[in-house]
Length: 412
Image (cartoon, rainbow, N blue to C red; front, side, top):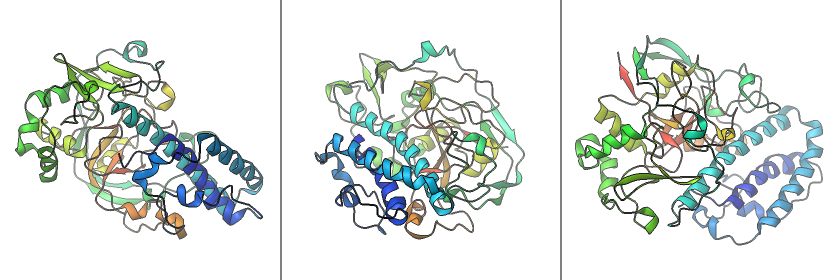
């Protein structure tokens, strides 16, 4: 799948980032480990140069994994020396590089899941992951909607992008420092009408009811592009994915066997947990479910306003579940952070007055502000401390490979 890269590439690319944006411009006398790596492990920075084609990353048998670890050690040693004067622009780029690596730690897991979860053998990534039973979750409380008055509110991150002072430093890992990406700025005012948001994400059981009600055969529920994609897919026929069945409508890793529903997790195949948040759904599916349920998806401004007073806690990558779990906290808005990235109805566009970072680093976010939708909140494979209420993720509306889920909203 074009969007999924092999683990070796992630290891090399995150190292390439420090070499390209820190060592080459700022480390006197630095000698690259291998000049070919500038081409092989450049992701999308046209200002740096050409890139090896993304769809072919998985066929790179060389360099070996061992050589990539040698590359990482080479760059780490040079970075140790540079960090002795990590201030100003050097310090800001170090912080950006650390957050960039956290993003790839998440992508590493989602890409591994795609690699293993589309293998007919459905092999596990790890067999020691926590599940619902060991987590001690009970059935989640019934969903209710939390109302907000609306009005003129402020949205976006305060402070300066990529590593300057920020009031949310306590939400970040020790040693990384205060941070926001450039696409979270500038902070600005928006007018919100009164609205309500569901206090918990949509569950597997609720999404299964959507499927069993024939929603994938009802064109009135779907956006035109989503319906066209459905017509191009094989029908849902109950085949066993582990026996090599073709993809079909529904969450990416769901399959049916002997009349029972299962899903692939990073721990291997598992019975579908009706109380856990549904995940690996596209924006088209999220939008159709909301319409079927009689609600809508929140805008990103509504989501951020609702999240502003919430603590950033939830099921993240350090919880050894690596899968969404049923709600367990008593917050007014449960599971707002972690578990699943929540689709919003908002296009990924620049905020009023947005300015990308100067130079080649300006390609980090700005050039992707077209044809994608914003997601909020993080997931069960996001690194702890990586999130804040203003964090904006973005994917194309048909994407399912990330841990994407649904939270409903309504007008008041």
